[in-house]
Length: 268
Image 1: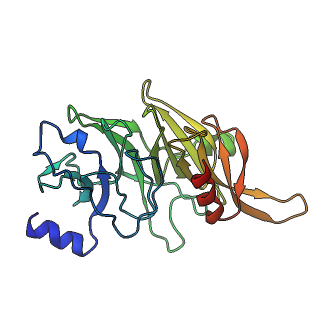
Image 2 (image 1 turned 180 degrees about the vertical axis):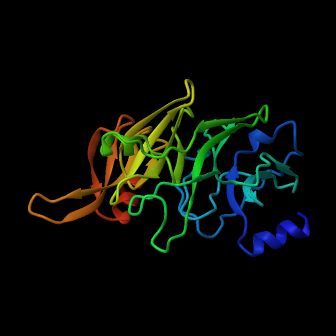
Image 3 (image 1 turned 120 degrees about the vertical axis):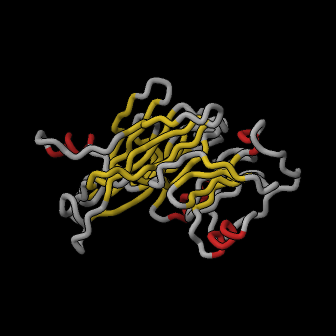
């Protein structure tokens, strides 16, 4: 690994996500068979060999790493071969599909993002740029815009916010790699969960949610763990974790805190 890359890693400038080595066949030297060591900051869960979600910037998978430097998505294997996947200088938050064939990522738009409280600026008056959802095919290197940023229109507020795409987070694939989920800022107390059918390119609003995680294996594979903001009938509100299906229908309450979510994952 060259000195510049090591320096960036040591300073925490590179966002790292581990990839399946299968995607590197034919374009990089084969890595050794030794497993990659766990990295600090990871909270991952899945069956062996499956994609793992992350809390932070690093998730352990196999022998290769997907990282962002200078706003471009790159990939490196244990043999320290590096290949750049994108070149816009505006990209971040890459995620590998479970089938190892594509990488979804976010690209900063030139447009200002919609923010729930103030419309287009944060509390300090800073104007934030919106995100777009992109994907790159690892076989061909072709990039595709999946979801462009959108400001709310002049119709019904609730319906317009279901269509709005501004600051995006939590990109995650379904276990069969056919759907891509993400959350975006919408209402003051809740974000919006969207899904993209990668076979048709169709995007849809799923439900209100402030976080999302896809269950990758077990009895509830393909279902989603979301945190929702709700209200008690007698007054007051709460933000608890729920299991929902891919259409947004609630299956059941998981719990109030992340520890209960972890317990659910272990039992699933």
